[in-house]
Each structure stands twice: as C-alpha cells, then as structure tokens.
Amino acid sequence: MVGEYADSPHHRMTYNDGKWSKARFRSFITSALRRASSRWGPKYGAKKAARVGRNQYKCAACASIVPNKEAKVDHIVPVVDPVRGFVSWDEFIQRLFVERDGYQILCQACHAVKSGQEREIRKANRKALCVNPP
Ligand SMILES: [Zn+2]
Image (cartoon, rainbow, N blue to C red; front, side, top):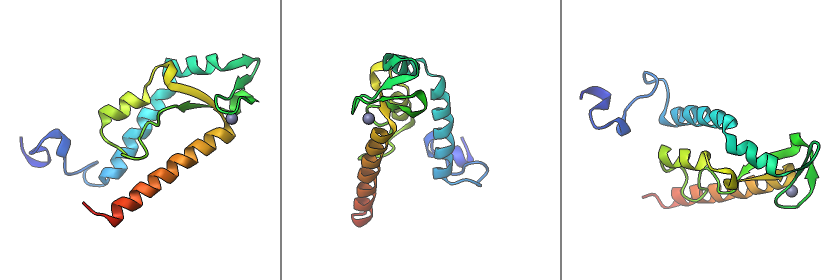
C-alpha cells in the first residue's frame, strides 16, 4: 500500500482530493446516514405506537397530545453521546439505527428541552477538553 493509504484505511490523510477537512467529511457521511434513517422501519413503528387518534400523538415526556408535524421521533439514547462525542462509525450506526424501543415520540417543546440539555453537556465537555489538553 502506498500514498495516503499507507498506514491503514482508518488513517487516511486527505478527503475529496484534499478539498475537505476530516470534519467536513464526517458531516457529509453523517447527514447521508441520517437521511437513510428516515426510511428505517422501527422509526415508523415508534410513531405508530404513540398514535392515539387521527393526527394525534402522545408525548412520552409530558403526555400532551400533538399533531403529526409537532411529534418528533427522538432517540432515547442520543446517537452521539454528549459526553464522549463521536467514537466510531460502528458505534454511530449502531446508535442511529435502533429498534422500536430505542425511540420515543416527543412534542416540540420537550424535544427542544432535551436537545438543549445535550447541547449544554457537549459544550461543557468541549470546554473541558480545551482547558485540559491531552
Ligand atoms: Zn412533551
């Protein structure tokens, strides 16, 4: 093996002929996988299970009843752990494509609260990494 793949396929040096950073490449793959997950059956199963009537879904957190467009399918365990951050594609895929019991339906308000909390944890951990470089 030669060139950019000399070490191993996991330690490549360039992405998109050197035009992209590793972070840009990761977000490219991440959004492709997230798009694919919209066709993942168990996600619909979770939505169906939360349906309580015509265009009515029950929030798993506050029990309010909301219409379809306000009913968010949420990963109970965040796809990317807010404390550890991205670990590997294996783990990312495992956590993205969970079975039905890995999902819950949240109303917009509860979903915003949960995402906000995860964002705060992420931010705090990133700050900690900057203060204490390895
Ligand atoms: Zn709610």
